[in-house]
Length: 158
Image (cartoon, rainbow, N blue to C red):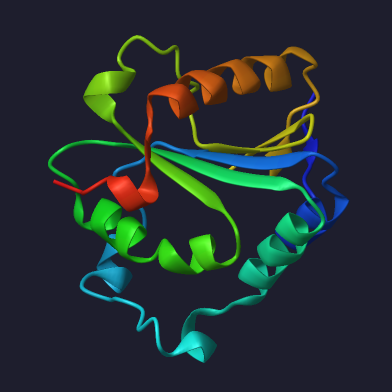
């Protein structure tokens, strides 16, 4: 039975081992972001509380990772996501990219999610999963995706 998920910063603060995000969508709120790029020199504009939370989490020795499964050629959202990854990397997050064509043999879940230690939180919606099998499935999927994916600094959106 699903339960309500706490706020993101609280989830990060409670983390004891890892916080991992799997993102598979090619679009999400693109219209308001189309063409926007952060200026790396203007830290005040892109250093948000969530990134401070990630940096603090990494500073406690917790692994924060994100894997993005993307279609090629990349969508506007994928380009936006890639362009905006440097603040996450500055916070200590590890990011990898996997072209969708290379993920065809992985049994992917139906939606994006975060896995905080043993708790699965969908990226869309606010319900955590209490199903004990869910974390095991998500860990397996994340391990498969991570092994095939390319590090952010080595991947170019096509």
